[in-house]
Amino acid sequence: MSVAATPARVLTVVQLIPALRAGGAERSVLEVGRALVQAGHRSVVISAGGRMVEQLQAEGSEHIVLDVGQKSLLTLGRLSKLRRLLRELKPDVVHVRSRLPAWMGWWALKGMSPRPHFITTVHGLNSPGRYSAIMLRGERVVVVSQTVRDYLISHYRNLDTARIRIIPRGIDPEAFPYGHRPDEAWQKAFFAEFPKLTGAPLLTLPGRGTRLKGHRDAIELVAELKQRGIETRLLLLGVIEPGREAYVRELMDLVHARDIDSQVVMTSARDDIRDIYATSALILQLSNKPEAFGRTVVEALSLCRPVLGYAHGGVGELLAELYPAGRVPPGDHERLVERAAELLRVAPPIPPLQRYRLIDMQHAALALYEEVSG
Image (cartoon, rainbow, N blue to C red; front, top):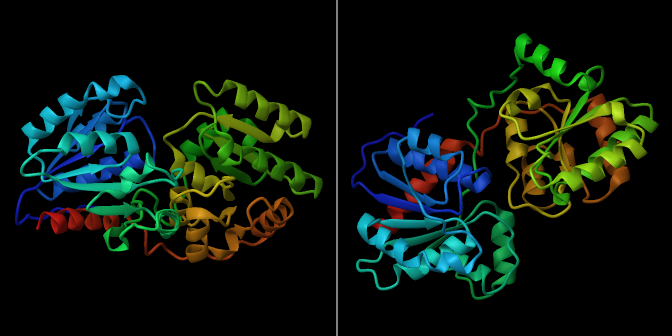
């Protein structure tokens, strides 16, 4: 899927982000960079680096290593270097996607003439206050959902709503094709690696090793279903991370206490999520705090796989629009179990995805750059 075109004017766009290791904002940086290059523009990213840099550069963007996101006084010492870089690059647009890089970018641009256009994207529901308010100083303030827009308006009464643009994150339907089924070789290898996951419908909860993602609720769900005579398997995908060992042990203790050791598998992040989702009977989204978006919801539904999630934040917003049958009130464990049993028995049909496509997000981002650049 390409956004290639002949630009009326070649733009230089610099994106600032703490690092390019993993995450939704980081993925958006790559996706927008790819679209800029395909459209004939110059794409530059400044970050501390990470495993995604190789792909970024392979797709035509430039990368400059400078840590603008480390929460340390050392970061302020890099301000003069950032200012020098921006003067050399002469960007048309500086696009920031995190609070500390936003402060760094804002200070670095002071006194520059001509001054590049300053755009911010609010990817999360940051705690309100002066530190977070830097994200509202953009000529355009991009938000990834109506949920984020409402959140900003409710906490910052003086915000000029005319500057807000909703540009939801998008997924490539070709990467998550409707009705996709993994090939036999993948299935054989996957279930050989995780034999516990055979023999019953698979529930998958993707999410980092943090309490916010609702891993305990997923474990309790499987235990309650078992008490009702409904056998399932649970994959906690991505929960194993460096530094999260104590949390993983805590989850394992809960699994053992609920007597479902033979039904639960925990893994680190994997690259075969498309096949894992496609193999799953249900994808779970049980974050106990509202999230800004819910990319997992869109990915799963694009594959024609049902999603069960708490109806708040960006996840609730997406489910309300795309799959209302998958919504349950946040924290309502009894309703969660009931709805899971219903969806495992008969899941309502899922139509092909018509919105939240990657190309829509890319076109909107490029149109915004062209808008502010005149």
